[in-house]
Length: 182
Length: 347
Image (cartoon, rainbow over all chains, first blue to last red; front, side, top):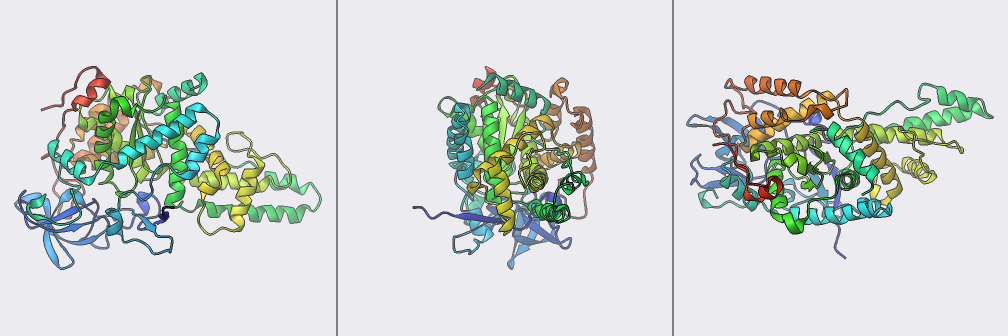
């Protein structure tokens, strides 16, 4: 039987946005999007210095005077540029998980592990099927099928869509750094 | 689907146009002493009344923010209701590309939201009779076919999805759900000893639910595992859904979701003015909630928000000044099945 990954707590923030801790000073920002790229420059072909994950703290050094939507930051001794949309003054809420042994998974690892739970919860399935209503039982099957398809969508696909639609390059295609900003 | 549930849903969606969900709970009968007074009339009144007060006070523990697992359980049950009442989901066999496209657009927004690691799922409800979007805790967002027909470009679609995402990240429904749990628990505590117990909307709480609530309080460890209390989940979800259908969210929560939606749109690179344009198209005549804000007021507030961010900031700006680089991508060919022809975005 597959070892069940168990959700334990929403950590960095437990409730509404209002409860999210703000950055402790004006120079502290938080990474908010998956696979955020720390770039050597704002050029589309620049090298990726590092890949950052939601919740990581960075030191804000100011907007790039040549491209105001890019911001110079320092993280773990490395400096580079991050696109504005990837940063926030507020820490994101993270759905931390723990293995059955109780050891919490690092936010960065978690961010790359995909969804915290797989599929409709056991309770919701029992609820839907227990009503003896064919429409509600049908809804269980339809929602499970939808979730399965939705889970197949990868960060690479999100990044490819953003590129095609000329959106901002916020969600990075992969979790490891590579050359050329891709 | 029964005729009754269909009509209820259509009416509910019409009223809830782009409002997602909400719960407004009346006070617990007897909370100001009425119940204790009733019990006091019996034998051993003083001791029983004190016990009830303690139980009712203990119920406040349930107001604590739910675990993510509890949120998924509740959200899944609520989402099933939306699917059922919305005439089912659009078929993956015939419209797989459209559903996938909506999930790509939605997940891209969700990944940039305040809850980037939530399990985001976006579905299309088959009903064409309502013009609406609705969500459930745990990352479930639905749009109706009727609404999709009114979408002119991807920025407008993204605006609708972002509004629902904002309700989820802000946990608007979950905060009401906390009130609901406390209220149900207090009613159950008041009902000990064979008294009939009803929920906020006048429906009976079963003895099993009353027992479950009592047992949970006795061994309270901060976690409510609804997956192992399915009857309680059923009771809570049903009450929540009924209340959502009859009430709605507060105006302030709708305004907050609009504001967050604009932030999310700009973050992703969409022109937020398209969302304002879409809001203006919402059929307001169906809105029967006194608390639901009028679209004119919603648009006015968002215009003011965008104006505020036109000036460059010395600090790190959460919204960039101006609309440089913001786009209104055209809808893809997959939308042809919705609109009868492929819609085109603006240049």
